[in-house]
Every structure is written in C-alpha cells, then in structure tokens.
Length: 431
Ligand code: CA
Image (tube, rainbow, N blue to C red):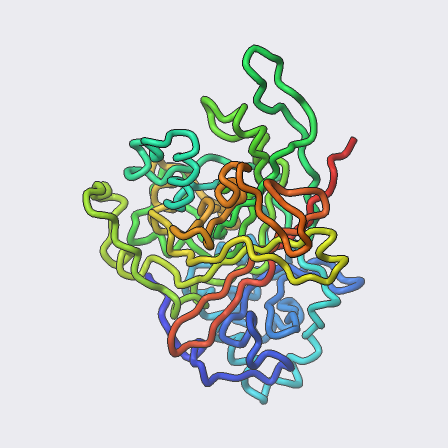
C-alpha cells in the first residue's frame, strides 16, 4: 500500500499550537514521532509540532486504542510495529487534535517547549544495516581505487550493503570521539596505531523499519512499503585510514562502528506521501533488475523529493560567529535502488527485520561537485583541501568540527516539511 494524500496534508490546514504555522520543519502537516524527556520526566513518545513536543502518553485516552496501548515505553519499537493503517489512524487523530480549537484545552497541558526537552534515540535499534546505493558516491569512491572500473559487476544487480553496529548509534547532539585504530602501513612496515587522521562524515538517509517479517519469510516488493515506518538522517562517521587498511576481504569494521549519528525524529511514510516521485530511470544499457526486485508502481512512486544538506563549522568559526560552511547539497533521489528494493533485497534470503531496525541508504552524492556527500569525495581523497571562511583548510575533520545534516521535503502545492537536525561535534580521542 502506498501512503495516500489526505486531509492531514492539506496546505490550508493550520494549528493552534504556537509557532507551528509556517514552521520550516515541523508544521502540522509533518507530525514526526520521537522519544523525548522534559526536565524531571522519563523518556516517552512524543510528536514534534512547531517549537513544541506533544506528550503522547499524556493524551493517550484521546488516541486510537491500538496506538494508545503501545505508548507506555521509552522507545517507539512497539508503536513502530503497528500496521501502517494503524499508524495512519494515529496521524489523522493527532492532526485533528492539534488543528481543531475544540481540543485545545485538553491538549495544551501535554505540550512541552522543545528547547527545554532532551531528544533520545527513537527506538532500541536491534540491527543496523548500511547500504551503498548512492550511485554517484559509489562511482566517485570506486574511481579513486579503480579509475577504469569504478563499479564492481554486482552493483547493478544487488543493492550492496553490510551489517553495521547498532550499539554505537547515537541521537543528534552526542559528541563523537575520534577513533583510534590501525592505518595502512607503508610497504614492508608495521601498520601505525593511533587516532584516525582521516576522519570523515557520510550524508545518508535513514530508514526506520515498521512491521517486521518472520524468519524465512521474504518481503515481496509490492508489500515492502508496509514495513517502512519512516525516514530520518544518518551520519555514518568513517575513519578512512582505518577503512583503507581493514576493508579487504570482508568490508568495513572498526572504521565505521565507533559511532553513527541519527536525527531523533521519525518522519513517517504517511507524512511523506505528497513527496513521492518517480525513481530516476536507469541509464541505457544497465541490466533490468531480477523480477523479485522490480515493481512498476515502485518505479513510478518509489523515490522521495527530499533535498539533503551537510554543513561544517569549526571551533574557530563558532568563536568568530561565522555561518556554517556548506559542504554539499543535493536531492535524495540520487539513489540507484529504491527503499522498497533495499527492504525486499534485505529479506530476500529470509532474513527477519524487526520494528525499530535502522537502514542507511549509503552516502548520497549528486553528480555535481556542489552535491558531494563526504570529504573523501570533496577533497579527492584529501588531495584538494577545502578552505573555510576563517582561512582554515580541511582535508578531513579536525577536533572541534561540527557536522550538521539537514533535509527538507518539497512538492509543488504542498507545505514543505523538515527532518530536524542530525548534528555532532568531533572530540579528541580518549588517551
Ligand atoms: Ca555509509
């Protein structure tokens, strides 16, 4: 089932919640789900609206029974396990409660000022899988290693991915410690061990799994949408020096597992209904995917009109009050495989997904130089450092640097919705 456009997306819909109307990210048309705590309170499910967070536990009696029964927790896993139709019912009720004046007296006491609240991971993440479907990123990185043959033969047949590390995923705002590890040695020498000297970010779309599948039961592509609860942003911090040494033959390991940052709000699949667009056609001569990975409706509506952006702010820039430096900006549609194809591929061997599992798209780069999604690409492997407004240069990230990812979904005739920040500052390695 493809999420449909309904009264909750009406651009004329307004809310009585202060600051919601015209809010750049969280107008009433968005209603993303997350886990928050206010001073003195335990983490609990909430919804972002304007500069407020609505406590769902506090208004449970006003919500549909199926959703209300799954709110007594410091994670969204139970709620994410709801069938898509129940999540839609929750959205429609919430939309009505924060737009109709009749409910204002009942709802208002359950609203908290967002700046006073702490945001947590939205789910207890059982598994984190990172893909590699940003075609321009794969080409750019592949070209650095294999100039004549950047993409390996499997790339256009299977969505390439690997199992990431769930335990070190943290919400936006938690600082990243520079990892230590083994780098690639000079010919005939022992590898160096120490703080990474080639620390990088990766601009990715996060996918939150909703209803899971039983072990042994693949997910047909025409049902993949039923298993996708929503989307966010992911910074897959990467230590390129560690990665270059360790990645053969089994892929990345410690170069990625030290920390990953996610945006704390889950923008639901239902909220994104107006922003679904056609998957860009495959270049002529590319193979037709196997039948289990192909669905015409998915090709027509399976991509998202989301604009992604990454910025960098050094400690000196912060001190000088300089605006963050834009590293790259481009559309999320630069993915060779759709999210439905990724989910179907993941379960095609019978692997079971659980509510609250996290998938990363892989770094999304645009084909142009102003839309690259990692420093590895922007600085050509460190060979062409960028210059910041303070005159500082960066080949890779320095201690004190803050990287912030952001995203906005746009569509003609609809109110744009945002994802909230995915930000973190690099701190020195622990001695
Ligand atoms: Ca990645």
